Amino acid sequence: MTETPDIIYTKVDESPELASASLLPIVQAFAAKAGISVETRDISLAGRVLAAVSDLIDGDFPDHLAELGELVKTPEANVIKLPNISASVPQLLATIKELQEQGFAVPDYPSDPQTDEERAIRARYDAVKGSAVNPVLREG
Image 1: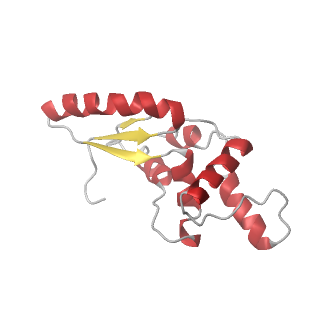
Image 2: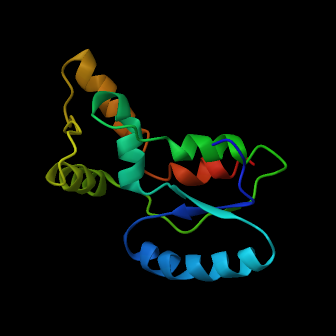
């Protein structure tokens, strides 16, 4: 990103996405009248999973949560953070399966890791579950 947008609007999960997707055009319309730009960042569970294993799969999936974590520490930060899920292991497993069904070569979640590689993969996934978003964005 070469220039910081005036407002960042977060993309979230499942049912909250229905409300946030319908609100985004309204926010954009009002902001445009004031000359304010609005950009989105994906902090959904699927987006966090893809970012966590981006170096293990084909594709470049930026870690928007880390980006926002840095941004909120600056005075320029203006983030509209919408409700998101506190991902449980079953939700994480369902997300991994859904991504795999969509053709993403994300590794399975090692429920009983035996090797260093499996422990490293599990640690990456464990970092995106639970309330991973709120503590990061509240730093600002």
